[in-house]
Amino acid sequence: MALYLVAFAAGVLSVLSPCILPVLPFVFARQGQPSRHGSLPLLVGMALAFAAAASLAAAAGAWAVQLSQWGRGLALLGLGVFAASLLFPGLAAWWSRPLVQIGEKLAAQNPQQRWLHSALLGAATGLIWSPCAGPVLGLLLSGAALAGADTATSLLLLSYAAGAGLALWAALRISAGTMARLRAHWLPGERGRRVAGAAMLAAVLAVATGLDSRLLAQSGALSGLASNGLESSLLQAAMPSAQAAELAGNNPGAPYASSLPVESTRPSLDGGTQWLNAEPQSIPALRGKVVLVNFWTYSCVNCLRTLPYVNAWAQKYADRGLVVVGVHAPEFAFEKDRSNVEKALQQLKISYPVVQDNGFRIWRAFNNQYWPALYLVDAQGRVRHHQFGEGGYAATERALNELLREAQSPSAATASAPNANTVPDTQGLGMAADTASLRSPELYLGYDKGGSLRLAGRPAPDKAADYQPASLRLNTWTLQGNWTLKPEWVQANSAGGRLALRFEARDANLVLGAAGAGPLRFRLTIDGQPPGIHHGSDVDAQGYGQVDATRLYQLVRQQGPVKQRTVEIEFLDAGAQGYAFTFG
Image (cartoon, rainbow, N blue to C red):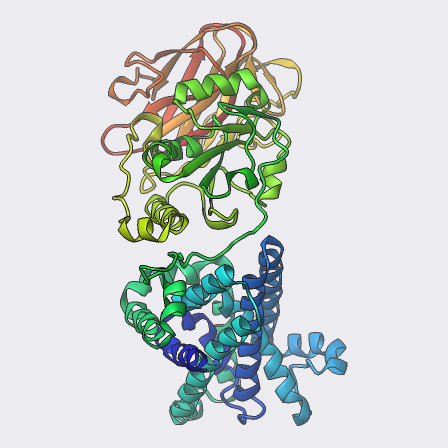
């Protein structure tokens, strides 16, 4: 019983946390109604939906996460419609008409049905709130993951939600007089309804775009820090000592338990085309090890900027039980070729296991959508952390240390302090993008994805044709000479073919290959002059370079202030193929 009371008290304290901010517009939207029709059923519905969604996450695996996100999306849609209906009464009258039979009409002229509408609004709000309920929820879900989710877990979550609901109800009661005066003098009638609708719509958009998470992350160091610390201290002080240690990982005699959530219980490395650097690996065979799964492809500049960290972690943590697996998921056809991938592994000094996922079966098993993407799989075979795209290196390494410590014996985990953050060598292509000066997106040259080609005449796909260049605007490119346009690439059919681009970024890179045996020579100019100090790692100061493999070539790295540039490449030999420009 004490544990439920503590969870309830922690929920009360959560009203001080910034994580409660996204739900406030929905709660205050019901303030003008009697408690039994407005705030009370809304808060009950919110608490029940929150407990149900969080219990589902604790009890199930990847399918539950997907179901929760699907439900959250529907909740956002419903709340958005409700907010728009406050702004536009005609919309409310139109969409509520078919739902009269189930009590969901916004006009709510029948008082007996008002509580149902408030409860439905509260349930949707609970689904919105459930992903961001703070560290206490993390502790409770970690305990459920270790000991198995059961009725007690759901009751703990419900206690936590009930505490938060009571605190919100009290806040509504305390501020009722202030809100009444505000409505009477400043927001009467129609104006008040529209202001409430605008506030709700802004909250929906913030949650849908992830703006709330970014703002909360920034504000957490301020108002959230005190409340979160107080919640955690309360839990640790009042829980039975053995259970508190199991949840918070502070008992030297018990296994350390990380508070990282369980994101998926069904990761799989099955279905790859072929394995390089090792025999085929599997998640069940790697039980007891922490596994870092890196989805990448060797011509992707974002992936290449992440690799120095992945390579450094593979070496640094190998003796503590870390296994790194690279999942090479090709973007272009040439990246499916085993010999090309093997050459890239050698050049990039990758010695850990890599599986070619040419059919994207592993990609789909992880429900992945990004290059690069990092997933941390714990010693029990569950995904506990992810990072999509570049960045997040410090957070990933902290999570890595957490899971390695969790996988150790109690005595070793107690003695093991987190290692300092890794500082890898990120020169050349590994250097992070200069986002402050980056004004150019990735530009594909093949006609399947390309759209910024400018020519003096009309293009002729899939056949050789002579082209004359057109004037360039920012983030457009042009051709001169005899070229063939293909779905993935463009090919210079004769010596002297020129490819020009207008861009604004510190770095300009180009994925290049050759139709036949190389190497193929080229010369580059920037604004009509040799690049000099602005040359990239694959070009000399005079602008000369050669295509020796199908890969990413760094053409330009501007020194000093970054400004718009026009880069032109003249291919001195026939057969060069260009795939995509990338920038940094």
